[in-house]
Structures are given as C-alpha cells and as structure tokens.
Image (cartoon, rainbow, N blue to C red; front, side, top):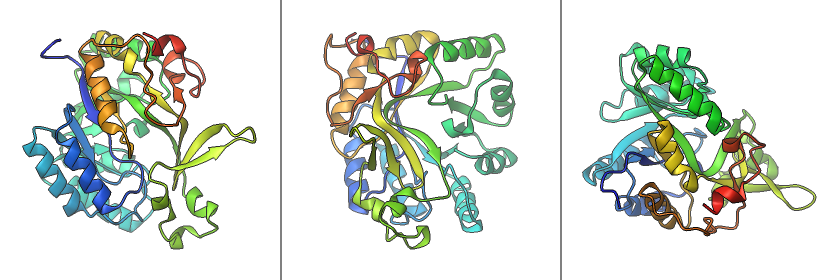
Length: 306
C-alpha cells in the first residue's frame, strides 16, 4: 500500500437538512476518517438555520486539530439581501478557505484578494475561464458534475499546457447536484409555502425520492435543490483520475454508512480494488453515466467490476 497517495479525498458539505445533533455526531466521527479536506456550511437553503456561522467555525477548528483542511462552502443560490449579508460574513470569516458556489461569492472573495475554491456550480469548462480565476485567487476547482472523463482529460491537458496549476476536484460519490430553483419542491410536496415551510425537508435526511410511474427513482428532491435519483460511484475510476491529473475526489455526505464509503474510497486510492463489490451500502441505485459520456442516470457494470 502506498504511504503517500497522490489523490486526496474530500468530504463535501452536507447537502441535506439535519439536526444540530446529527451534524455534531457526523463530524465527530469524520474527524477520524481518512479524508484530507472537509467542507462545512449550508450550501443549499438559507432557511436551514439550525447551524450558525459560529457553529460551523467551531466544528472547523475541531477538525483542523484532527489534521483536516477545512473549507467553508457558500450557498449556490443567493436570493435576498439577508443571503448577501450572511455570504459576506462567511467570506470574511478570517480563518478558513471559502468555496465560492455562485458569482456573488466569487466577486466578494476576488475583490478582497482572498484565495478561494471554485465550486462545480460555477460551471467551469475551459482553460481561459480557469486562467482568469487563477489570477484572482482560485486555489482549486471542482469540475462540473456532468463533464465526462474524456472532456476533463482534454481540459486538464490544456491547463497544463498553459501552466495552470490549480488542483481539480471531481464529484466521486453521492447524489449528483443537478439544479437549484427559487421554488421549494419539498415544501410543495407538503402543500406548504416556501416562506412557511415548517422545515419539512428535515423529515428527509437524504432527500425526497421522486419516482416515475414505474416506481424508478429518477430524482431526489432536497428543498430548492434537485439531485440525481441514483448515487454516483466512481470508486473504480480513482486510478485513472490520478493519471489524468485530478487532485481530489469528493465524497458527498450521507446520513448512514458514510464511514464505510470513505474506507472503500481510501482503499481504492491506495490501489486496493475488489473485483466485485459496488458500494451497496444504501438502497439507491448506482450511476456513473456522465463520467462515461452517456446519460447521467446510466451506470457501467464494467467500472463497478474493476
């Protein structure tokens, strides 16, 4: 087993709405997991107020003591002046690197000359854009979740040719974030208005399944966010990711079985891949279609079988 794998593992922000106790328990366990980077913060909906910025900062300090690099993730959809005020406080936290998930965060961080991480929702597809962001402080960037392996390999090669050194991160595990809306679909499911939602999404710590008439889960509703119904699993793609120049594989938190997921990916980045064992830790189907240049909800049995 290699003692110094070139590919790092990151834990993305929790996309779902959990209780304070659930967050505390989750990150207490995560402190001992073999992940290098931990993203904290509410990146989906400003109405999820159980955790304040000071709470996230406190968790960040504890995780830093455990040897993790901590990043604060901003909201992907800013809708009000109150959202902007919270964003300013997040960007000006003075302790941790911030992941910019929309243009207002990007503007705030770049204008202040602060280093930052560029999130996937910024939709970065070409070296010209990446070059501009690198000049104003981008330290690393997350590839769009729908970008294929072939397209990303070409983009990374172009970046190397232009001397761009910012590390690339790939969403390697979890329900894929697909879209955001000013409507709250979970509240609508319960026939409640968005501004009086009674926080019904907290009843669904892994989102609300949206199924076809044939009972197939096609999407996962998460408040104002729409996720894939299937769970992406690129565990068997880690060796090729490292070869093409990807620096970080992101694992999106789930309420159950996350320790086993992290362990499996840690083994994979060290070259220990079981011949047959897709991550059947939860009921969700597995997908990897986008990575292979096909419809995102598809999955390749070849990639799961090594």
